[in-house]
Amino acid sequence: MGGFGSGSWFRLSSKGTTESQHRIDIRVLKRWGHVKPGEFSSGVWLWSRKGKSTGMVVYCVNSDESMVLNYRHRPRGGEWETVEQRIHFAKAPCNYGGYRLWFICPKCTRRVAVLYGAGKYFLCRHCYGLAYTSQQESLQYRMLGKARNIRKRLSRGNTVFDLFPMKPKGMHWKTYDRLRDEARRASAIGWGILGRRFNL
Ligand SMILES: [Zn+2]
Image 1 (spheres, rainbow, N blue to C red):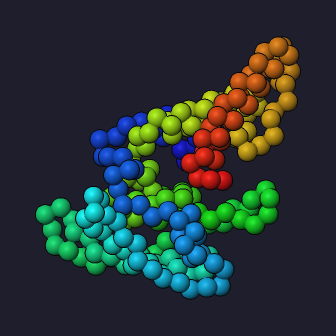
Image 2: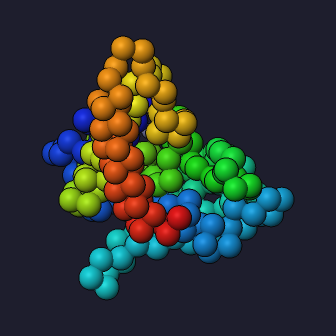
């Protein structure tokens, strides 16, 4: 699984960028009042560009468990076909109580907040080889990657979510302090940008 800061996260791809695709975002579904435990709900997701409609998906949400998408897709040079796709949700507990919801990408099973209709099915951006273009996101992932690499150097197997590792035996305090400060600054920049983007 590609984590924060793995180089492939922001490598540009000839297949296009996330911005140019129809996207379904679980945070938006939630904001619209869906994904409530024990409730069924449905709606229509519409996309347009410059005032012209570019696509439409009918979605039925089953509680906070899964949803089914119904739409029509036309492969390049082919005939229109009807597609039905089920997407399951994953729950991750939050530190401050409750839980956060993710889509489980139907192809690679990664937990993601956004799925893209770049082909016949809605899949994560890794599966479609889509890249973010904005400088800000690139900086964000670079900073989180930097923080993670420092943590890895200090103690194997740690991630940005764990407590900061202790000073390894044999390392100078000066070196450890410098690395810790660098990691903190990089995390703050990375998560700060994340927070502003998604209003966390
Ligand atoms: Zn995927």
